[in-house]
Length: 510
Ligand code: AMP
Image (cartoon, rainbow, N blue to C red; front, side, top):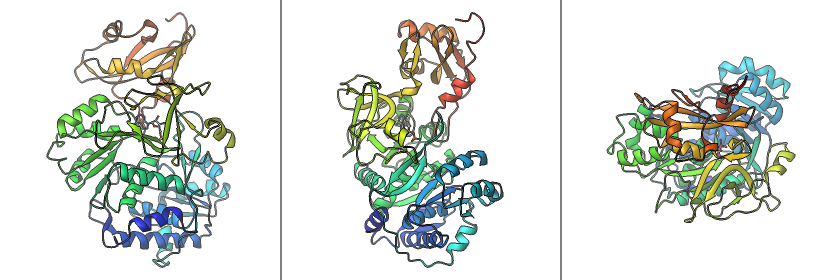
């Protein structure tokens, strides 16, 4: 049996040896032959450290080309790659290492001393280091191994990676992704988004998350193109690299920040054939402004750690702002009643459910949670609320857990947010529910006003009067400079709920 994922990479990149796989802005380059040799040496080092098939290799390092080679080396060694956000503290790592029980941990050299006791407690065999500049004990070891490696056999159902979900509610869970999940999704995306060997992808995403790792990197490995690899997102550096790229994948924050930069012009993006956005909702205004400034319609798609990519706006045809497009080929999407699971019809709002070769194998060592999230017929319950319109476009209404129940009535935050976002003087807003003695939950709106806007609470409420039923009106409108967001651009509604949880505490507030 071959190594399912890496065999696909080999087949798809055959004849590309001298072609550039990855390039960094200072001009460091790795050809496809270099990628093969480098990942072979790392795979050799991992096996030398006792990593066997199915062992977890936990990695908490800064983004670097070597970190990407480590992903490939781990796959080739038959291990399960387990990337962790570099921002996690040692206390947080304690949980991940205890839960995942990795054979080895690779961390930044500066963290080795702090992390070692936690790793020892979790039974980790070795703590290796890898710095942002590619130095460290792992690469020292790898240097002693040859640039050929016989990939360890792994089938489609075997795990290639565990990615911990961001865990905005409760503990984060390890999503088990198989070789088959990753191969099927990369194949579909290459075809659907028309990736070819000529493509050069601007990569400014983190590589511990499904977007930057699997969507961006696997797609490029499967088309044999070139990655322009930036250490992080910076609007100026992105614009400097844009003329050399043919495509860019980003979270909505990338697009809003680039729009604020005077360097974003039609000329600057003339060489690009495709801008893709995902991981969080792209505001319809951003879509429109981007089109006006650059002439490009951003293609919005929808996915999650557990499911890889599920839907996409079309390559040809209308890319409709505020929708995430159609189910990708081979993937089934339906809308169901969250409680009963009854499948709903066109335009009815319910929970989005998905089935297909993209859907993960379950949560690591958590059969109860896994069972709770799958329907008996195999569909995975995403926890996102949405609807499918008459043309078949999927619309996301928000997370089911963000639904507000006030006085027994359901309020979908998105509906209120859309109305407030449309008001002059509003940049964006987030609507959440907070505890309220009478109503159970009260609707509140947290609004980011445009610079110089004189909008106040009364003006917002007055504007909503004729637009929304009274029970949906916010009981408070709070103005802030920015909404709290995580690195993937997602608004952290849990933080807003915590910040304002006492808003209605105390006597007689309405
Ligand atoms: P993650 O597992 O971190 O990738 O987060 C997945 C979640 O991000 C989904 O369940 C959605 O709630 C959200 N998401 C991803 N893409 C989009 C999108 N295009 N529009 C709105 N929400 C999105």
